[in-house]
Image 1 (cartoon, one colour):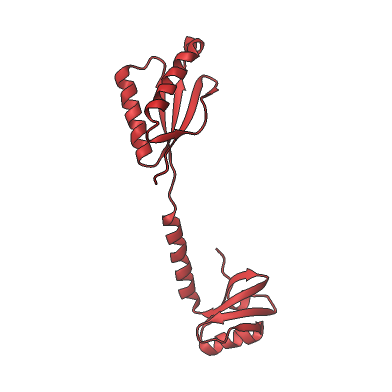
Image 2 (cartoon, rainbow, N blue to C red; image 1 turned 30 degrees about the vertical axis):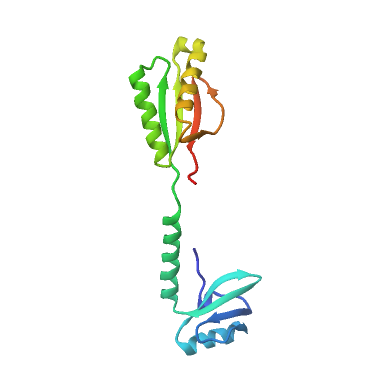
Length: 167
């Protein structure tokens, strides 16, 4: 974020705001004189038709702007996508383990990408893969929603599952 101040401002007239300053539209030279008489800086805070400048200490203004930006960044929730890979010949215990991992990811608020990988002749038995994925969707339906139907991509079938919105 580039903030222009004092000599970097190139407009003829600016709208002046600030503490202990009469708000209004001033020529740039007058605004600079007001800022100098107070021992402060003239800082451009926004531009919407006419530039708005504030009479304030530049270092304090920069500190507050960085602090506000940091708070905004920390308030954003990072949505991560986790991946669970399965195969057609998965054993029951392994399937339950993968399902529980996916459930844990969903409960933490992450979306899950379930990938069924097929090798060689397994491509002929695509119905078996779809049955396993449909079972996974059904068992996770209490805590998640499926974004789209099963979509084959080469030797894989992929589904994206996202957590249900909390009320």
